[in-house]
Length: 277
Image 1 (cartoon, one colour):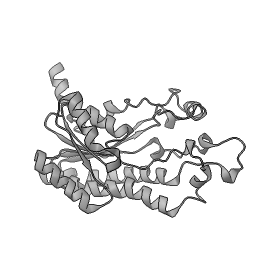
Image 2: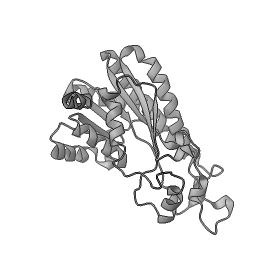
Image 3: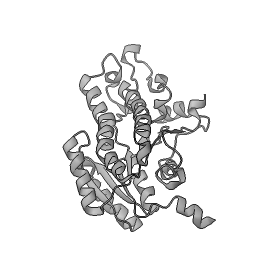
Image 4: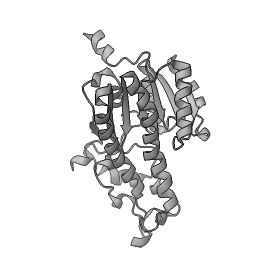
């Protein structure tokens, strides 16, 4: 039985594309793919050094890995990415749409920029370009290749803020008037909620082509945020803490493997219970 259970989670021979693969969570997604025997392809901007991060995976896990510097908002670069993957590995099996802009409001020096009334149009367009247009283009190009092969998995990384609204009290600073208080930018909620719509659309669109499409909605991950912010947020969470950076790996592996073979169009919420309150 143990061998059968292990086989459910085995990704040996499967190639997984992870956008934003050099980032805090993206690299953790890549780690669990590698640990399960898969081949991670880390896709990110050149400044994040995806090639160097891929080499770290090779050294740590002894698997194939590839780092690719790609702007996922550009169709020609995503198309070239697929060609590179097929040239090197002859297949693509998993796409994790993880890339997103997420400015750290709690530590911004000029907090008022994030308020809806002040939010720059160029920031709106940039955030949607990465988080939604990028996910659309990668799904369009890489998902279509998987559909052509009649098998594949797409996992969209949404957020607890795709199912609840941001509690703007978390970002308030003492001594500032209301119109100068920081706020979680509108684009984060819009992008993450949009990913859930994309998930349902693609799940039904490609259901007859063997491509399963799901989402996870993680809560906030502790990454050195200010103590007062962490305390405020933890008070809203039944488990009374933020997530550790590695706590979503089990869910990612489940969603990308045959262990979830009868799941599509779903959104799994992993928020420490925050959305229950």
